Length: 281
Image 1 (cartoon, helix red, strand yellow):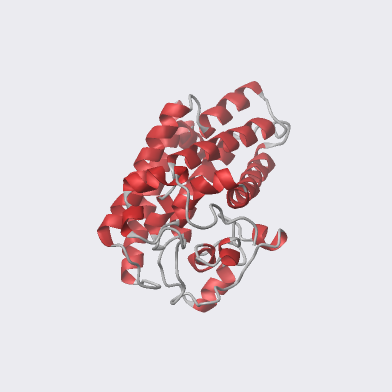
Image 2 (cartoon, rainbow, N blue to C red):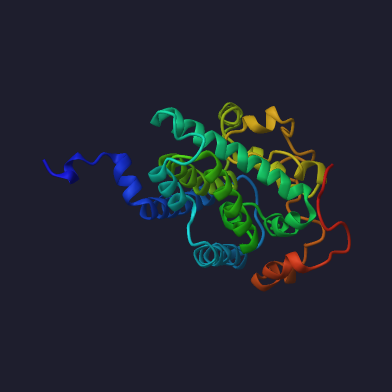
């Protein structure tokens, strides 16, 4: 029997990591675009120009990562596994994978929270929050420098714990797909949504985080598992103005000129008329 026939799905995913991640992203992006068009939760301003600008950022982000880092998350995990380096390397495969995914998920919760609390990190992250709309394209709207900082933190976590390649791959796919889903302007029946958010972050839950009210912006930091907000006391159930009438974005960046691609790339280097960061509420 050939090696190809003996290869299981885990081996195939590891051997075709880049293709698997790209396929999951493109299929999810296309599907969620259609779903939010068919069943929108609320009206989104900005039109195709806003969507094109947000999508352009993810292309720039990808190029920056490839140029700035000789090794990305998955590549590093492969090398660490080969050398058996890291705190989780002594565990059997299944618990190592589960624990690795959980560690990365709670790490990104705290990374996100620190991006709101530390002024220099907030300057990078506010590009994401300056979006006046909230839909699937918001899920790819991040400044390239924030993406680079996030990757550096992720690499440090992977190196410290020796997180298994399969755990990294699962998390990376979940991260890209989850970022799209949690920002989708999709109507989900209330009864189902209330049950779902006990486990996963839903668009309804994450939309609160994009409110222009500071205390609401400083809530609901989780990316995948919603339990971190409950455990670390940052959970907020609803926006005070209601989901349909709430204002999305930041008070300092409401003009059309501040929503162009060039303005977004320069945004972290600008002073604003009020507070330069959201800080603690």
